[in-house]
Image 1: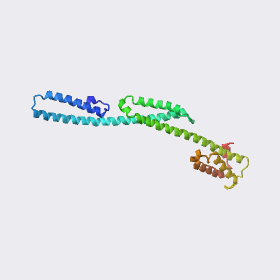
Image 2: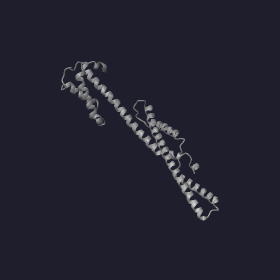
Image 3: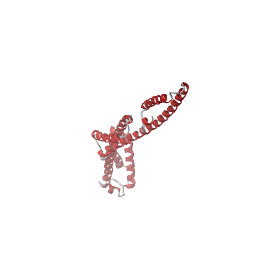
Image 4: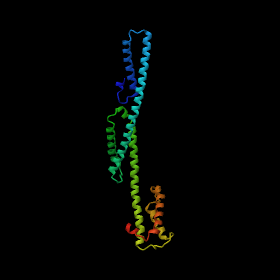
Length: 241
C-alpha cells in the first residue's frame, strides 16, 4: 500500500482503489496462510488484519491530505508569482510611457507568465496543476486590470504635472513682467486671475476631470498661499519662464 501511494500526493479516489486492491491481496494471502485454522480462528484473525489495514489506510490518507495541501499551497504561490511576472513584463514593455493599446504587450506578458508557471510546476502531477488553471487565469486577468488602471493613472499624473508646471510658469511670468504688486493682499484681482487660470488649465468644468476637482482646487489654493511668502525669493528663478 505504501509503495503504491508513493511520496507524491494521490487523488483520494485513487488511494481508495489502492486500498481495495491491497486489501484483496492481503485476504488472498491470509486464506493461504491460515488454511488449517478453525473457522472461528480465521474470523478472528481476519477481523484483526482488516482492522490493522484500516488503521494504516487512515494514516496514509491523512498523510496524503497533508501532501495535497502542501502541493496546493506551492501551486498557488506560483500562480501569484506568475501574476507578478505579468505585471513586471507590462511595466518593462511600457518603459514608463503611457500605452494607448495594451493588447499586444498583454499577449507577450501573458506568454511570459504562463511559461514561468509551467516551468515552476513541471515536476508536479498534471492533475494538481490543472486544478489551479482557473486560478491562474483569474490572477492574470486581475493583473491586466491592475495594469490598465495603473497605465491610465500614469497618463493622468503626467498630464497633471504638465498643467501644474504651466500654472506655475503663468504666475511666474506675471511677476517677471511686473504685472504684480508683490505686496498685494489675498483678495487682489491678480490672485483671482491666477486661480481662474489654474481652474482653466485643469479643466475643472470638464466631465473627465471631475474626480480631480477637489485635489486640484486644493493644490491651487496651496500654491496661491505659498506665493505670499515666496514671491520675493529665488523660487521663480528655479522654475524659469
